Image (cartoon, rainbow, N blue to C red; front, side, top):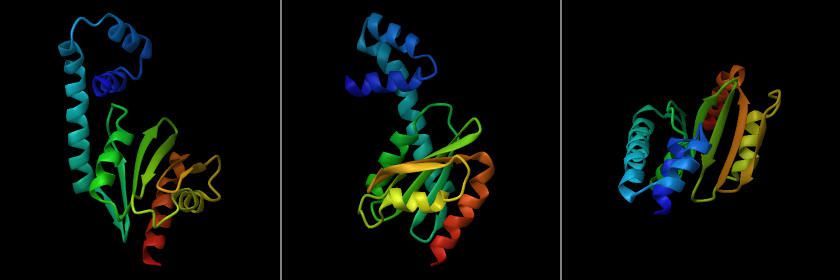
Length: 156
């Protein structure tokens, strides 16, 4: 049930009042499953797209997510449990910024420090988190330089 509710919230992310009203008034689990099915399918598609479209910089995998649903974290978690020995970064454009989430399950990279190094000097950029799960955001104008920094880091 918790998973179904989570997927309904993701589906109605842009209108949480509607999600609340829907969950409050739902008549059966099947009505929730309708929306959960859409979100699950989107996650599956995004995982497949990650596998085929990711940019590889030695032990860093970088990918820009193109989804209308807010599934960045779910996709990243699913991929990170399959690929435990790589630094995985998924970016999603939100207006004038790219929001990024990173995972490294084997703990060999301190992700907050790594991301801080990658965004250093970018105006308005922030990075932080936990050693195995972190995030950052940068201005859209800085995405090419961010990729270049990943490329250079991958060559070290």
